[in-house]
Amino acid sequence: MLRKMILAVQPVRRRIILLAFLVSLEKQKFRNEMTFRRGLLIFSHQTT
Image 1 (cartoon, rainbow, N blue to C red):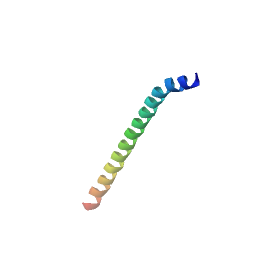
Image 2: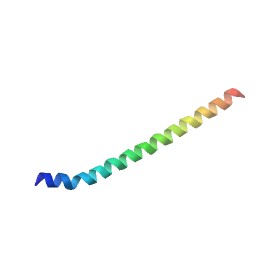
Image 3: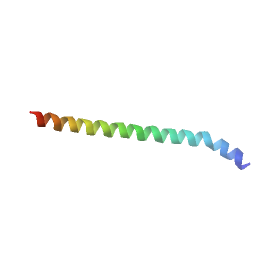
Image 4: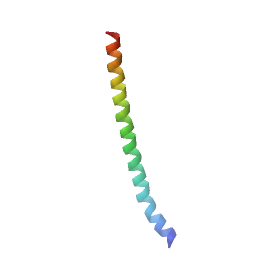
């Protein structure tokens, strides 16, 4: 009984985990892009 419930829940949980992982990945990418741009700006200001 409990095993069946766990098996039924597993795909949903996996999907939620995958979704959360993707969201965190996107956040990380966005943050990296922002810091990269900031670094690029600082670098371009330093060279001039």
